Image (cartoon, rainbow over all chains, first blue to last red; front, side):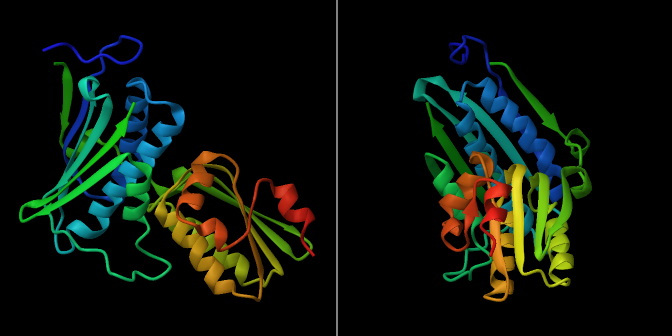
Length: 139
Length: 130
């Protein structure tokens, strides 16, 4: 397997976090790390901002909705896929998927639509074991 | 392939909302300017909400929320802006200042920039106050 290299030829390792507590106070540090990683992967600054906000909204959704009755965790993996000319970030939880209401009202429900607008593709896959959100940005 | 795998809660430091966001209030006659700096997310948005609510108790004619020094604006912060807009209705002239993509892009993508006026500088927002 060829090593994964960014535009400047440096190897960019995957960024992986496992079993992060689904608490709002853990998300700022994660998004700062992710932002640095995305810049290191060679994404332009404006797209780094898009990625940081979209992944934040995905994580905030897990914190807010996935574990209504108990403490839970989530996993985060960010990968640069040079063969597919994209970066991909996957957020996985083991909680329950709460479908957004059809009419959330003016004050709520902006996170997921915003996430979909910011990413080049956003695939949210709810399952019986939890939800996986896969977000991609093309180079 | 090289990767680093970090497990366990101690590896992701916690942050307090107070560290992320600071809010200052200035009055220009009847216009209150709430200057926000830092990052507005789900953790820190309640601080902005409470600062705005304190200002509203003093019945300004105009309320300007200046996001010029905000480097990150998540949907929780957008909700504070929208709820402020709804709360003040026609009573108070509500304006937002946003300059740069970190704040301008989420305001634009969600269409909130059509719900209330967004200015590119505090001066511009203030000089057009009636």
